[in-house]
Every structure is written in structure tokens, then in C-alpha cells.
Image (spheres, helix red, strand yellow):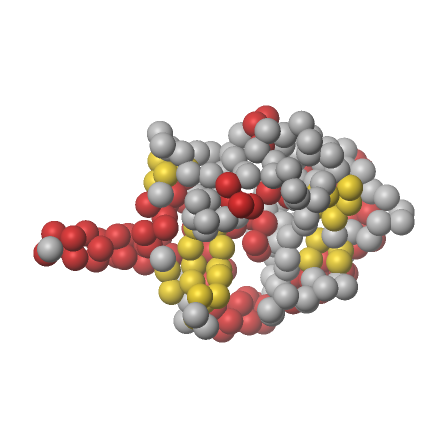
Length: 226
């Protein structure tokens, strides 16, 4: 995962300390990512970053520009790698986007813009992940928080933060991706995304898997009492 200072980690923990876990969203069935099928659709439009991450990525901009071509990522002199021109809720920016034609991808919504993350390789692989592996670092060393968690998300619901897997029945973005779509013959999300759950637990200093299983057990008790 993206390496944060202890001060930054404390900021994350404080920000999300009261976030509840929607345990039942992790019981929906999913499949592991197949890059050959999805071609990195989740990279469409780039990804938002937390403020601490954005500062680290800005500091490494020149390094990314130098090293990304070594793993096959196209870097354009006139296209910034990062976008700080917009904001949404607590976000102050994220990875930038560049034109990319998804028209041959069967699940890509026809009304979406054809753009992709500036760190994505044309075959759909993540340049930040490829770079980390090439350098002998953990695969998620350079990747932003919400990028490596997807389709797990932390959303605001009626003024409260909730850790969940967004239901693809209600979300076009999740439905368009390989890993975000529910699958009739898949496995529970808490199994498929165990690595992501472990990463989130480490960053927040919470046992998210235990919270998920406790929530599922509580729901089962309610059902058995009916």
C-alpha cells in the first residue's frame, strides 16, 4: 500500500474512527479480477485521493515520470499525472485522466467519457503496481487508498461514514467492472477481498474482518429469532 508516515496514519484513523461496517454487503458474491476480461475498467476517470496521499504523490511526480515508461506506461509531457483542480467532499484531488477508447469493452457504459487514469498501462495493468513490483516493493506500495481497496469503499450515508462493498445493482461504475459486479456463482466478498480487508485493517488499526463476521453473526441471530 502507499507508504504513509505515522502522522498520516493517525490522520486516517481519526478520520475514519467512527465509520461503521456494512457487514452484509460483504456477503454478496463476487469473482477475482480478470484483467483479460475487464481491461482495467476501474481505472476509468482516475481515482480520488486523501490529502496525505496527494502530497506524497506530488512529491514523487518527477520520479513517476522517469520510471513509469520503464514498465510500459505512456507518460505525456503536456498531461499532468495528478489533478488538483477539483474537489468533492473531503477530497482535494487525485490521479489525472487521459483519453482512452473503451468502445470495444462490452461492459463499458455507452454514455461514459472514454478516459483512463494517467498511471494505467494500455493493457489495463496499473503502472504504479508494476513499478512497485519491479522495484521489489509490495505491490500496493505506490497505489492510492481507494484504488487498492476497490470495490470496497468508505461512503457517507445520512451523515455517517460506512465501510461497504457498493452494490453493483445500484451503482453503474461497480456494475461496469469485473471485480465490482456481483456473480451468481461467485464467492462472498469477505473471501474474495480478504487482502483488501487486511490492508484496510492495518491502515485503520482495526480488525475489519472480525467486525464483518460479527455483523454477519448478529444478522443470523436476528433471522433465527424471527
